[in-house]
Length: 514
Image (cartoon, rainbow, N blue to C red; front, side, top):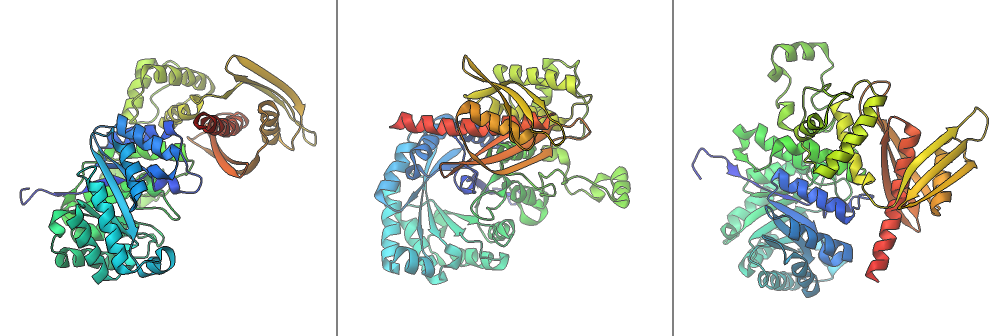
């Protein structure tokens, strides 16, 4: 590397593993594959696809991602135990570039209360785990869990032993988000200066966001010698989440003058990636979220607007186009053709095959008859809605609703399941949304408890589309659904029905494995 070239930092994405551990964020196989494909388009260096021994679903997801994604390293997580490592390798065998990621807790509190192991046993187990993984593939990552709270002397011993055993990456996790930037920087400096064989491995960091410092701690680690950052789209993950991929990437790119680093990430795909993950997980991005939030490039103060009109850099340190936002918005209407829609979808970061384009275009024409102006956000909503509408199961054929103040709503609902249609007419509920939910329960035969319901606009104007998200509970498990329409009752019906379809899909998958 030439002296004036930026140091390349690897981006290790764990949206499919740690991100999925966010409460309510579980994904099915089709959704994981969509996200994996998006991560490959982003040019993520390493995709941690799951924890193969955790469940048959996790194993299948890792194996399918390993089979389909060839441009990124595909990683499977394993504890330092033979069964975990063997299962991880079994899932990863189709990968063009496989990596086994083994971990073992090292902090005093974990040694005493979780593992009941002394230091020598920890080192022995770590070495055995790394050696077994290295017997399967040459790319092995080792994580001393809770490294940020591990005694520095012991951490150096464990890392040295793991590298000697064959680890090519050593990941230093701030598992509980306890570190501060100076603290994390010192941990990395100590490893660089005190571990004799540290040059034989890449130093990585995995920072949690419990104190809101995950991105800052990751950047401090990079300043002090780390060469890989573990992160997730939108920063999702356990508890308060992980280091946000879009934030840490753009921090290094925008402040390349300071960090002297860069990544392979195609930043123009960050906003579409954020929207895809948000739509699939049901975890919304707050409006003022850095980089990808709706307000990230919005200016209301008059002095800011005046400065922007004269020179954008007065109040913007990045161009919105560089992360996937676009200035042009009102370009399509009911007279626009399929080619124009395909071009706009590509511009927004979506690659649609012929079948997907045909389906989105049909929905676009219906929406164009309802709305005078079609915004980019409307098009994004139509595309992302395909994640749900393409799912097998029940679909809405038609509905009629009659409501009157002080009277019980009257609903007539027709659902389709394959070639079969079912219709119910009912007087029920204490409002139109409750009535449509009860009618869906009656038709599908599934009685669930709605634990969360939210609705918000996906664009602007009186005729804006509404996005409804629901979470329901069935037999102790929670399931999500989302629906989008200019009619909020119809959107609610789509969302509720999607949750029911998820229940059915899980049950059918369970039966198939038995």
